[in-house]
Image (cartoon, rainbow, N blue to C red; front, side, top):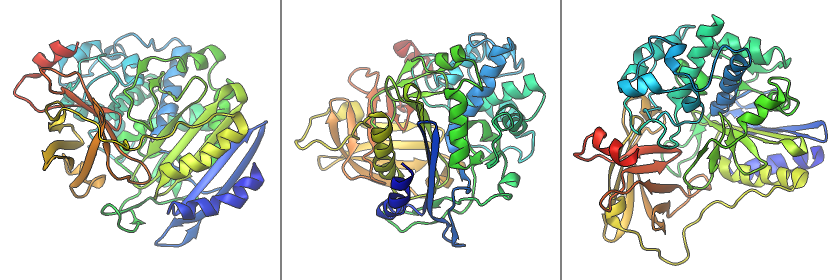
Length: 458
């Protein structure tokens, strides 16, 4: 595997316009690793295997680990209310506030708005202030437990539970409970630590199709650290984290196995799993892991436990899904025999879908999505719903879609090698109640109250 990585990584990142990538593979007890490209186009610093990249939402697996360690010690029960651990915990909906549990948060079934990237403090109190000041304003978009809807704020709440029960800030817990026991050497839990390493900067296209340029900032808001806004590491250290699960050194075997048991189904939109465990993504019956994305950086982490294989791919911009498909697809095929599923593409023949089902405006905390029909064509307009969201979507984006089947749309043209897929859920009187996209259920804007919608969906 080492020879193949050395011979092909540079070629593949050039093929997919990825400025830099680092990959590590554990197979047959041996770690192979390679790096290529430029970490920062402004400085020209070259990537090495010691370079650290942000891992984004793969951090959620580290937060899950902190919670499950507390479970093992008898300090947390997954089905007890969050208020048992955070007495002042509050959401906008009082019923949900009193009933939501750590299991809801680990499985993304809390149903409240999860993408409020609201800055609080850049210090050790950032998570505390987020739960105190931001979370109480998060509205209940989906009834508690009604379905999967990816929720970043839920993992900030989990991080706060760990802080309170351990009496230390989140970033210190990452180092003391995970990085130190695994003897990781190239990990940054906060930006100050990143300065000690050769570090990647994300790269973005200001408009679709425009050349990549260095991102205007390195990280998302500090308060979202338990969800994935800060943690960075080398691919080798991410593999070491995976080995901690394969060898059951971070948690005992029964606890590890429980994390990989399906907890909730996920609507089919391609590129995501169809089931979720406790914190972990279940890609099929033998492939587990998580993806991560921050500002211009994308990370991919996969485990195949019955083969003892782990793969970590870290990147800083470009057509990273296509790179993942070819690079990680080859690695998994050669080491485990696992074949990655093909991503959805527009159908060769037109498919009918009811315009009444899909058209309308769908409002989330992060994005406002409008689906319309113009001259017989379906168009989707994405707009940032807040100033914070403009970091991820600086300008409105308008994209043509076609029907994939009777309840899903697919982008007519790919972006970063992938055709975006949107699913429509819970129709009432022929109109969708929710749009499912990028893992989120987003409610349609209607004159019906949330309570009316809740009765329909629950």
